[in-house]
Image 1 (cartoon, helix red, strand yellow):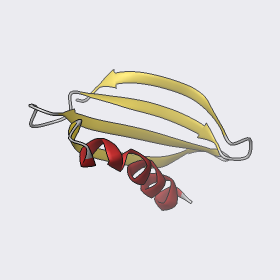
Image 2 (cartoon, rainbow, N blue to C red; image 1 turned 90 degrees about the vertical axis):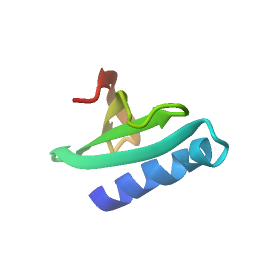
Image 3 (cartoon, rainbow, N blue to C red; image 1 turned 45 degrees about the vertical axis):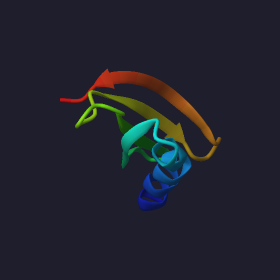
Length: 75
């Protein structure tokens, strides 16, 4: 389920790169709790070499809803 969540996140945002809005899209997924998956999505905008911020979601897959969403900086 973790690998699939990462793949879905990357596939759902691939259009941003295809249309030239960003130069890269990457996602990482980890199990946070028993029914929660954490997903971090980083994008590098056109004109940047690397991502400087990332959206972080905690997702409850039993209710199909995010439990938390935040925007942070990439370390």
